[in-house]
Image (cartoon, rainbow, N blue to C red):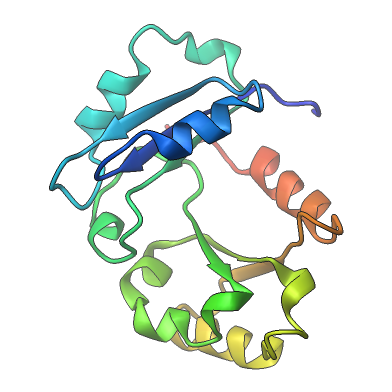
Length: 163
């Protein structure tokens, strides 16, 4: 199924900086600027998608506003809800932000090439994820080395479509 045709919606309180950076890759991207609202909702996503032919896309990434608790309560119609956790943020992130972990289908640990440098404890991270969401799948990835990327992409394309 690769290469997949992907697009992205980027949610932030202010600025379109992330969308501008992402657009440099050639990926279709739209910014949703929420002002003071700490999350995206289905109406915001629907309006941002106007004019796009979704049948032409294999993957649509929706990056919610950066806060990890407020957005977790809103269903955006996603097929796969993923929580990203960087090794630089520490092993206790799932304990600090339990709501997003409770609603996620998958945890992706990013920047894994830095794990040793920042003394990231992989086993502790998995224990903490399991304490909040028992049995949740976890994938460690590194964009720099490519480790885990194939597993991550396979999970994306094999995710069942919700009706």
